[in-house]
Picture 1 (cartoon, rainbow, N blue to C red):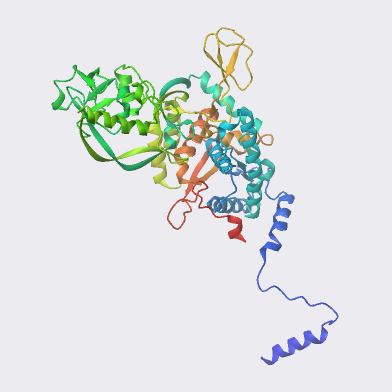
Picture 2: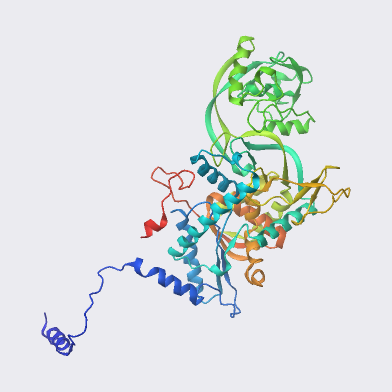
Length: 555
């Protein structure tokens, strides 16, 4: 050691009071001992609340509300890290900064998770009445919400907990009901019979965005329809056929248009029609038209004013068909129908085809397209306004590719089915009159009389709202129901930051409903992040069972 340093340390030792206790410094920082107290002091000091005394533009993020059906997983830490970084940066710039937290009741996803819990106890949703089941799910959700809040705090999320919102808070429900009533009064909501994607296992219809498209190989059956041969992957639905269609440009069938074909096994004659929607390169180029069980067929049926016959019910069982098939599951009925077609000499050949089918995004089962009466929103007037807002630069996407995806969806959305046949969620505020059978829609208040005939006996719809309809109002519903004046101060918000996978589910719907209700975009910037995946490349998801506890990793 150099001489000057030896003199320095010698001086320290000579002046030291050796009666004092000397504590050795930890070689590494043990965050477990201190972070909880640090966070508590931050929160108690009001450090996470915006300083509203400053007359400058605030910076606001409304937290994408994690589903309240389970604790957070490692995938959630990505949005927490990104948003917390943005919030702390703008807070240090001296801007009034708000990060508003919340949780989502998550509709079918939560009910699905709860039913998995019931299954472990050898029970199902059918063992309980509606009110009891709702109360059980409510308790399940609120137990998990407390866990989720504590996890966010352990991760250091500097959000303003005094403004925490839940999608089933009474004041939020009131906002959602008000939006539904406004849409209804403006002629943008209707209750109608249309083709929908129905999950037999979940027992509910879905919108087009909730369908997962999966490629697979299936048999394609070539069937003798008398004057023409058709090809189909679903021979069990032949009893619902109301026509055979060919492409008007297909020279093979020009002379047959206007004549009839004969449905095998039941010998019912149906017209042969021409329509441009028919793919002349698929199968024989002749398409059996089954409006009750196929979206394209339904569209063709509407154009040609064809009747609708349903042969599969919402339990997935055969109806309105020859007696021997009634009550069979559709898959079993297919096997039986093929056997009978073969025996009758009406099955010409069987080939393999690679095609796309729709599956439930929750339980992965094959969805059944079927005719069902649901509540729909006419989306075109809403999407037009959002497309104009994007073109004007009122909302900007950090990545241009996601702007293109958003525009694609906005231009191709069909009318939005917002009703779900589940218990958990916001019950639709609509009552049907048992006299005139017409519907009365309210802001949530129970009507004393029918709004059409004045009758005093009405029954409320048992359906609930699609969770994306309620969460699509999240930016303005939260700010309109927190502290006085928050909506005026913080709307439109600065950034919507979320996973790219829910761009069509959620982001464009927030834009649609936000612009419709408030006249302004709900956020000025869209920042989308990628997904955290497991070692097989699969998305981290509670439903896949590959989740990692972020607190365990943090510790």
